[in-house]
Length: 375
Ligand SMILES: NC(=O)c1ccc[n+]([C@@H]2O[C@H](COP(=O)([O-])OP(=O)(O)OC[C@H]3O[C@@H](n4cnc5c(N)ncnc54)[C@H](O)[C@@H]3O)[C@@H](O)[C@H]2O)c1
Image (tube, rainbow, N blue to C red; front, top):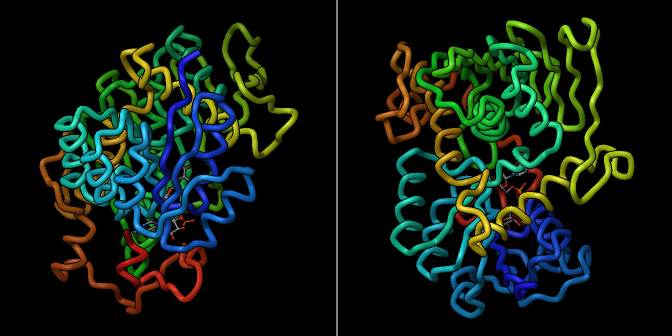
């Protein structure tokens, strides 16, 4: 059994708990350093997980002092590139950064470059790739259980970068990481809406075409139905996928829905209910990351090249709205097209006054407009 990998966490709020739980459940890591602007966030993690890592108010100091093997980046989106690049300089074995990979394609590319330059493995935490139901759906599709996939339909909310980078990543995962070759879409933005300090739209629709011929349809903030999962229509059957289960309908099921509720390697669905998706995906992601770090596997399902593609698909919807065209991938525009539209006056909010739909996450006297908090 190899020595446990030493982990440092930057940003100790909500999702950091899922990283810590995953690392601990996998049995392959120890948490050595926590960094956060708020001491209370770090204390909360110690109490919840009965751990006693060093606390740092300055993440750069944590990196220098602890020299972790693995660094988790769990700050808000606009901090992902800053902290990934800062961590890469210390040459950990791997960095696991939260989604969306960055706030612009240009910054995401810089993250890849900084990691390549320093020999660091970079993963993006689209953890649903590690859910047993998602993997079963991918495998059934690969085996031809529903024939050729024609359409994937999904329902999202809370802005494209936040919720829908999971969906765009899911489309590719379900299709065996097939490439998305073009995107068309549109958005509405009448209010000055933000999500974790990132500018978002009020509503969006997107169409994504893949080289295998499949098309994915994304409806975001336009329907009361919202969930991570999809309705997948093939030439010879259908799959209804959620984070907990899937239903298959094809000739072999006699034309009726057949339910599958696969357990995970670490947890059982019946034991955890709603928490299953978080606990299982966190632990399975951590275990596969350790295999990659230790050279047991050549590839990691959550490699940053996939994270970049998921972000490009999201930004391509904005670019399609900005340019009124079908956007070919990979995107050439490296700025955030939504920012370009708003800042150029092309899409000035008609109901002015910025507000952040995740402002409730902030501790103490901080507000979503704090530049410090945005990192
Ligand atoms: N993979 C998922 O399913 C999933 C789910 C939730 C959130 N997320 C992602 O995780 C990220 C964080 O979201 P959250 O809900 O945990 O937010 P959060 O506000 O709960 O936590 C962020 C933490 O970062 C800290 N922080 C801010 N600036 C810092 C700095 N300069 N140095 C150190 N710490 C700093 C804050 O004090 C806070 O404790 C977001 O990018 C979000 O998209 C992913």
